[in-house]
Structure formats: C-alpha cells, structure tokens
Length: 288
Picture 1: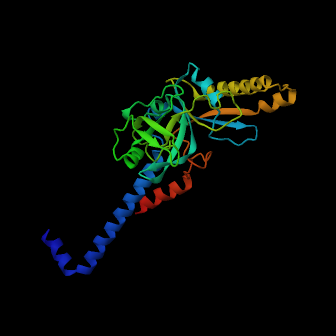
Picture 2: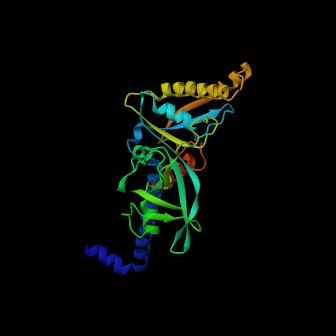
C-alpha cells in the first residue's frame, strides 16, 4: 500500500489518467451490458414466457405479419392445447381533460383475460372487464399523471371538450419497456370484428399447455384460418370457385416464441432488434 501511494504521489498525472481511463472503461462496459441484457431479455418479463407464442399470419403474398384476426384468435382459444390467450389492439388515443388542460391518453381494446394472460399485476380494482362493460383499465403511469395517485377505481376520466366520461375499473402495473405490450388504457372490445376474418388488426399471444408441439399447432391454425375465410365468403354470398379455394389455401398461420420476436423484423413497430448490432455491442463490451 505504501508503495502504491508513493507511485501515485510521484506520478500524479499518470495515475490520474489511469484512474480516469478505468472509470470510463467501466462506465462504457456497464452501459453496453445494460443494452445487451435489455435486448436479450425482451418479452421475458411476461408471465410464463417460455410457453407464450405470438400468432403470425401470411395471406398468400409470402410476407408474414405479426397481426391476427379476432375469429382465428377465438377459435384458437377453444383448442385443448391452448391454456390462455390474449388479444388486443391499439386505437390511437384521445385527449382527456386534466384540470382544464388537454392530456393525451393512449387507448387500446382487448378481450377479457388479456391482461391476466400477460401477467399484469393488479394494483387496484380488477383487470377483467365484464363483457360490454363501459369502463377503462389504466396503467399506474397514467393514473399517477392524471389523478396523482394509483388507488383510483370508481373515479372518472373526462374526455376533452365532451360530456363523455370513462369510469376506472382497474389499475395495473406498467409492463416493462422491453416487451411487445404497450401500456394502453384498455377497454373491452365488445363485438368489434367478431365475425370478420378479413380484418387483421390485432396482436394475439397464446400460452400453450406444457408438452404441446408448436409446429403441430401451426398446421392446426392454418386449417382453421382456411375454414374461417371460406365460411365467411359463403355466408356473404360469394361462390367458392377453385381459384378462390386455391388462393385461400396459400394463407398460413404460425406460432413464434415471444423471446424470438424482437429479432425477427416481422413487425417493424416492435421487432426492432438487430442481431448484427447486438454482436457488435458484445464485441465492444469484451474489448473494453
């Protein structure tokens, strides 16, 4: 120790530069480690993520999309291999009245049970609206910003420059940023798109029972999608010609594990991971 102090006193500038260099190196390494860990753990904060899969579809053009239609999701929920299912979509949002000042509220519609499937933590009230219930379930971040507290079940949110009010029926803890789930103010979707297999507008995550082969589910969901489309066409007065039948058979569905979606680039709004950049970050961290 005495020898070290002697060197420090004798070579003050060199010692200062060494300490400064080590400090910068450790700081850079720490920042890189946080970034790498955040990307590698994307969606792993969701409940039982190892059994959770995103439903993806293609409608014959070869390009896969991370959105689903409601009829397919509801048929999937009836399958014995599916333990739980979540279905939701963003609705943009609206402005609400915060003490005479407009405040933006990001809205989403969901099927009852969606938040429980995703593993949301209930802070106040309940997370499952009754079918058709005109209430809203809000994240903690919005509750604190609008009301100044989190225990707000039963209180109302006033729409800006309208007489309409939304009653809060539940408050949930915000989902982590490194997940596919946005912290919407959720409402029940009611009968919206219940019989419209042509409207791919929803994010659907399914939790399979342990032991279920997801590849076998792909074939089962694809067959279900075909039948939904053909039945929908027939019920709307369309004749199912061989050409239409052949086209519909190009439609496919598949399940993708939620820990792999971030680097898939299927949905550019949420699948923002880049394996090349991640590799570069890992190499830099090792070199540092």
